[in-house]
Amino acid sequence: MFNIVQKKSVFILVSLLIIAAGIVCYFVRGGFNTDIDFAGGTEIDAPGMKYDEKAIIDAFEKIENVDVSTIQKVQETKGVLIKTKANLNAAQTKQVKEVLADTFKIKGDNISVQSISPTVGKELWKSALTSIAIAALLMLLYITFRFEVLSGIAAVVALVHDLLIMISFYVIFQVPVNTSFIAALLTILGYSINATIVIFDRIRENTRFLKKVAFSEVVNKSIWQTVARSINTSLTTLFTLVVLYIIGVQSIKEFALPLIVGIVAGTYSSVFISGSVWAMLKGDKKAELK
Image: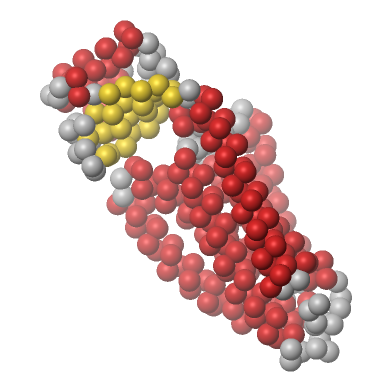
């Protein structure tokens, strides 16, 4: 049986290389590709307008200094939500309404244009970081209470790993960072910790019967006993998310993409990182939990 715990340095190195690539890309490319939710810009809501991405981009080419950031189909209004990183002035707002009304044969008066301040983005970042920190702290306390302090630390390390992998993916491929990304981060925290707890539960059960065996060996045995369940559960979720990403509208795709990346990262950390970190922190001791 392949010893996952013994080869932990290989799996940790893979993760570190991805995170390092993200850090390099962050500084080379000047940070995140932030959507207007964070960077500020203008949101144009056009009810009843046909969703035609190419036609919309072509229409905006007629307007000077206004480039489209994202285009979303809105089911409720049977229209389109367009975002630009530029803050439109009065003349540009008027021109946008006229161009869209003429191109798509809709009433310009029905089109609403709203500016979003970068200050709102700063508040979103602050709220997101605060939420993540609180979630991580509560998970640390819960796992410490259920198992031991070292297992709680190992679980938080795995969670930080998942978040850094997701962030690195967004920086490397310059995927726009918006509120869907933040929501996905918080969702993945819960999903990933659940997979980790399954493995930790098996480790605790095995310590009752393998008290004379080194803890690292118990961890490796426990991982292999649960790996099929972890992978099958993740694949079932991934199949659904991939289908949603392929056939879904833009807003669904923006939420599905970080979830896909997060689930892959979470499964990887649960199987190859969390248990190994716990064993590394505990050292070469017998299989017993305090």
